[in-house]
Image: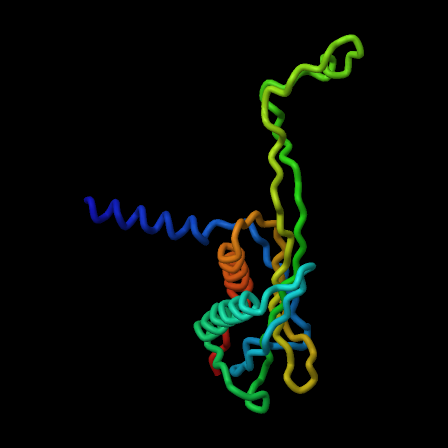
Length: 194
């Protein structure tokens, strides 16, 4: 009984870390493309488009972790990564774009004076009874996964997630990018066996 409870707790904790999202993947497939009929892919390094320059070590970490997630999930779907363009039937790459803004919490101040007391010219303004509303940094961004034809560089398939996040650290931001990439690649059609 105790072991069963421990397993249920571990499963719930794992799910809270990455299962519950409200992200919707926006997908596009070229009408003439049949990604499921292809077999091999070449990974092409992605691009980061952010207002501030991303430090080189962080960019390298993002590249490595997004690549690991995407290639692992594509392998699970039956695709094979190849080392050169001549053997690839498709090119897989990604793009991360984002911005950051600060917003003030919409929660009312507890114990704050009424506007009639503050704006009345005959009264002295009372001291504030609570802290100022809390500011939060919100990161708006998108993760896009591209599958292109190696010969023409034409787009065959694209998956996109746009989201607002409130991550507090670089590590949690990278984990969010990993989860977004995993959700996008989950919508790639599985390879059709010949």
